[in-house]
Image 1: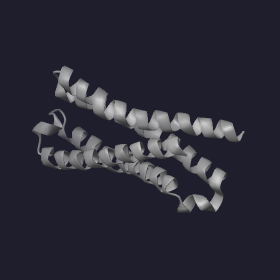
Image 2: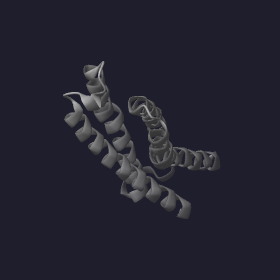
Image 3: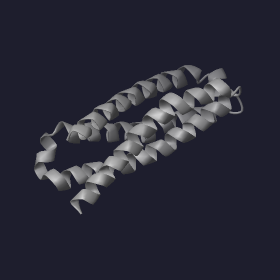
Image 4: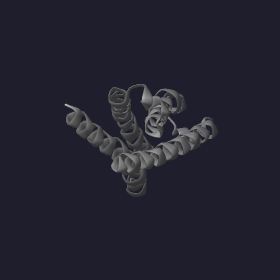
Length: 151
């Protein structure tokens, strides 16, 4: 059973971190490059990030529980545990903090595109904060992959 939980943890790390990199640094840039309708591209990108957020929450919760079940209280002294916790907290902040506000700004701007509305500056600021948080989470994911590969 211990092997099964470790194999599942490895698969979930692969899905979570791979998703972060594939969506954030491959799919979304390609979408904005190839889709002439920037509003549609933004909507599609937002939907991908929302779905990735739910995946991240599920993976993060499992990985934290799995770490505690394997290492007990020692988990709280290990960098790996805190990297997973930081990634999960970042996901939660993006999913339930920043993204709903950005969605609300888009809705308030209708029928105009939020980038051509009075909400553009606030939206750009939140988008910048979101991008930095996403980059930090992605880099923590690299650390997680490297650290678990060595373990």
